[in-house]
Image 1 (cartoon, helix red, strand yellow):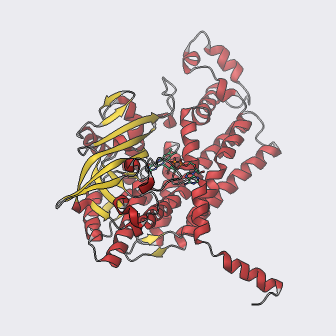
Image 2: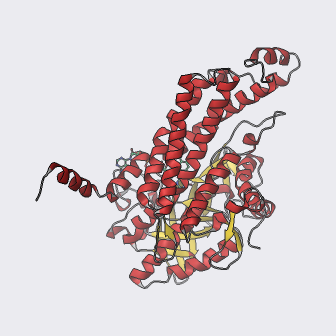
Length: 477
Ligand SMILES: Cc1cc2nc3c(=O)[nH]c(=O)nc-3n(C[C@H](O)[C@H](O)[C@H](O)COP(=O)(O)OP(=O)(O)OC[C@H]3O[C@@H](n4cnc5c(N)ncnc54)[C@H](O)[C@@H]3O)c2cc1C
């Protein structure tokens, strides 16, 4: 069976060449600092065989007919897209935030679509190579990064205008057996615990920029690659264990210092006309995933807000119910956009279904601009305690515990321990480094709101709306 276990995933990480750096030195992939982050991705393996979730997290490969993890699947139907979106929302609930692995799912889909389009236009053989790679990826149940965001240097300048051409990843040498690339990708989530880095362009490119038009897959421990990583996660618990505190995330600057990539792993090389198409196709698939994960975050905020209001005895206060309804509308409208993007998806020449760009972008935009508002609602209803709650050690200390138990009491129906657990969760979730990460991810991950607006504006048929107004106004031409 192509579905692997979480244990097999952890074991293969341990066998990789050490090239991860964090906190000033090189670390192994078995370093305890990475354990919560690896737990998150490990959960995607567990879900694929969990009777409760396997209807979402497992599927059948259209290439081999074998059972595979849905995170390694390309979407060949509307149903595939609907299931991916539902899987993302469901699994984000389980880990209390970003499930991370969908990023590569969206990248392999985009690579599949665009490699075929390049072949159709240019007679190249990228798609054949891609399908071979995809088979390998599915059979081994691999985990990939999306190495898209270049470091980008001066934002007002194009790649070929930068003072240092390496500020966008580029091809520096073409050989008989492959290419050599140099540059760095920024913010790369999962960098230290992926099997493969999947690199794609970050923007549209011009004729002068064919060296920057490059897409490929490379083992994350290949020669010349360095993952310079930071780790973010909730504070570890001592005794009051909770599911949320088992998970974390890590993001990397991934340096490609003259990395050799064999031709069979290169899916674009020089076709600058397709740089923007690949960048935006990934964005489309990934913003579609965001229509699953962002509603999941809103669900968590909504649930915590409603629960803390109940615990405080004010669950029925009209202003709180009103705020909660607003959160419901944001979550479900974003989710509905993802459903619309799935239902209105179209098959590409590769057979892969591409979500309707307008709807995936509208859903992602709506979520992104509401992130801080959502935390604002939770903060205002929770009161100040998430920011001033004494340490867990003081809860555990027999000398202070009776006071903390007595004075945390609100609704007398709810035990002191439950009240304490809820406030500690809200503190970790909304008043911590982890919440800062989640807020920035909510705004910028998959593209900042301005990028969605530019995408929507570029593809929207505003003229047809003017025609409607003209017709109604009796203006004829
Ligand atoms: C938590 C997190 C995880 C991420 N994970 C990944 C990942 O796994 N893989 C990946 O590839 N990327 C990842 N990203 C990157 C994400 O896609 C980028 O952060 C996003 O595209 C914005 O790019 P930037 O951070 O370089 O910001 P900038 O490009 O510096 O943009 C910041 C702002 O500057 C302005 N601006 C930028 N360029 C211009 C311009 N030319 N003209 C006018 N104004 C401009 C805009 O207002 C923009 O909002 C992640 C980001 C975050 C925050």
